[in-house]
Length: 587
Image (cartoon, rainbow, N blue to C red):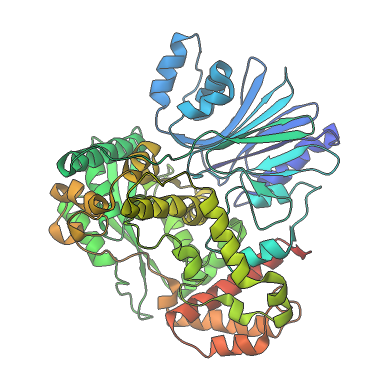
């Protein structure tokens, strides 16, 4: 719910520092005039802003010549406080950034290895005039940066925040355009689609010293052999999941489990229901299908059955085409890039309604990461093979001269080769385990980050504290080593997880396939709206996509009615709106 930003910029005039920080803060927030805490000293500036109002007041932590801003949801703050207090640290607040500050003062850049949970951190040391940046292991919390012409660096939680600096422009070259059109579900750690604007990759830290930026990896998943039999493995998976779920829910009054009735989220609901907590409920998004009647879009009954079985309150959040159209502009403004195959507008509606139900920002637990963590090793590079719209490759729509520049087949091959080259050595493992661990590593490093980024942006602008217990590093490191036969124990997808929580849930939930997140594509009026928008864009010279797409090929796409075509149409509409919204210049 908070965002951080700042810079080291020797050319920034002191009287412009605060207005520029506020401009960046507004670019990252749901509304102008966002509540922002700032700190400036010479050529350095830091800010922490509330992404939505009302929320906990933003704060900058300063002590001993070091100033810290953080966007953090740590799960081991109590342990760190006890440890640091023994060495003389005095805590004046319960804020995570104060824990990060004292950890940095004691351990320097190595402090990040002691932090559990999600975080993006910036620290400036006035004694050395060095800026330090760090990001959590899986990139749950975003952090982007750009080197400035003439020296210096600007950083911000979001790409839009970086672009709000007066010396950064939104430029997309052939490589970024190929990522948008050919491999939009495939994430390249450390890169964005914009020239000169990079992300700090998950599990990395960086130092800006004068004009030099140095970046290093501080954490990486390492392959290993599994040493437990199946019964012991089941007990360990249960213990780790219970510990991580409790760590995320501990100390929060209002806890919501986002569920469609599948085993991943249902397990979190069961574990949370068994703890001593003031208020816990489950919640599901339903679409009005068919319109105008309200009907179940698939997830309603399974989710309600889980809640009833666990004796939990349950909330159905209903959305129709009108709701999605109302939410659409704010959703697009929140995202750093369009999201193929994901119903981000429906997710925005869901989170916004959850936030509106209570005065305090709810903690929302999700099953995100379970599919990747407990993958069985059958579709390691599916994100490149299946195309950007799950069955429809957008390179069919490109003008011939554009395709000649982007080289679709070569681009996909290079992306996959680069991803494989970045994997640790798996040759010591049996072939089936090599395939499984490769799939887990590729999914966590190259497919999941895009979804995490979308969820983070939407949570921030709705005031929801979104948590992902399956993405705690203890759980993921343990699950990575599972043999393929154990991961799909009993012949079930995610079989070991299902066995671990079987005693907590009804059989139909434990062994069922789940329903997935409902998509706006199920709404006839929404589909018609998308089609009309793309038809208008394809003939509008002012459209950002007009010089890139072949009008006849687009007409052929609009003549199709299959689900893959619907997803491709929706993505192209969102892509055009995003390109125009950030005022992209093609280079």
